[in-house]
Image (cartoon, rainbow, N blue to C red; front, side, top):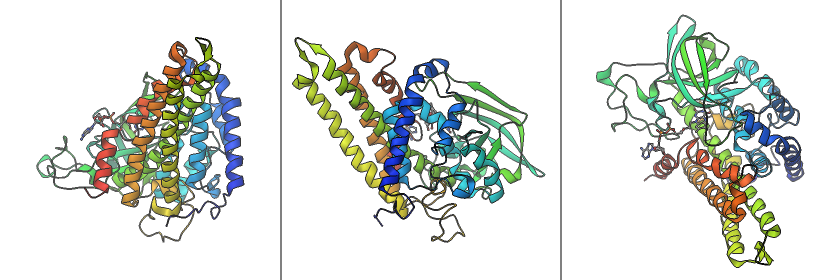
Length: 446
Ligand SMILES: Cc1cc2nc3c(=O)[nH]c(=O)nc-3n(C[C@H](O)[C@H](O)[C@H](O)COP(=O)(O)OP(=O)(O)OC[C@H]3O[C@@H](n4cnc5c(N)ncnc54)[C@H](O)[C@@H]3O)c2cc1C
């Protein structure tokens, strides 16, 4: 299973190097000079989506017939890692690439007509896609979500709230987890689901599910965000300042049934499959941010003179740098190993009724793999633990870099200061540390 399929997927070493060069130039020329202004403004400019689209960055990993470029995980993670290392902004990446959490379920489970309507304008940078799972009542326990979609003729009528939604203020399409089935209180007590990313496990009491069917009542719907009844409010954050993050309310929003993904009640597993890809991408990002901290700390230590010598001459500083490097190298090796397994097909199996040999639109070289369900459980446990390891590497390196930079590390404008503030969301978003450990344990059969 564990062989490199990148070349088979039309992506050889030269293609990969060209991609890395393009992303580095984009980061250094288009992002870094403007980043402080975007952070202060609380948003990235709309034109940046088109710029990234024109460079092929938004379409990487999407099927050709929808305007994308099929690419293995190896290439997609190289993009994430390189943009994190040289762009040094998680907020920018979260917003610019919110399509990569919003669209995979559409690719894996949407009808061809729905895919043709939603995906191409997003890949061209003309429309923005986002994902809406988390609610004010909780994010880790997806099976407890309360937003409802009630069927009325050819429409669903949607009521509820979502919170912490990346690109929520601007998105044109929201891939939304809703409850399509509600059952009477007396029959719901024993239905419980595993935390984010796990399979359904019955028989243990959980949170307040007195009025719902837990995991089996959840469906996914792509909501066009121009409908009446939607209100959006912006949230203010510790970091990711240039990323828009919203609280959304839905009051009787009507969405045609054709916008549902897959079958009614099949949404929970779609959400879980999607998380695996998000967590792998976040691991590559965290690694890039750790490298950015290392780069900045080495540069500073070379220039800064104390007591008649450069900091880099001091054993205490050199050892701190090597502690950073040790974690970076181990994370790189693990990212590479898990990525190779994803490219070998362990990240997903086809949706029901689709032959395993079938390639795009849902094959391993596209984001449809992320949106599909049934990933290999050992691989899933590795992804969970890798996300924790990579974000801890990022945290360690941000802390060490700020220390090496001294007072300058506390100042706005350094990459290390920004990354120090951004690490917490990497350890919480997309599946918090505690949830990752529990899921890894379950997937390991413990
Ligand atoms: C900036 C930002 C952007 C985000 N973007 C999106 C987005 O685009 N779309 C989206 O749907 N969501 C988004 N999220 C939400 C994110 O995925 C959730 O915050 C995350 O899943 C955790 O959910 P929660 O905040 O409700 O915490 P809770 O689920 O309330 O958990 C709180 C804490 O308790 C721990 N915990 C929970 N249950 C247990 C348990 N059984 N045992 C031990 N510990 C436990 C958790 O690990 C966590 O540390 C975003 C969040 C942030 C901060």
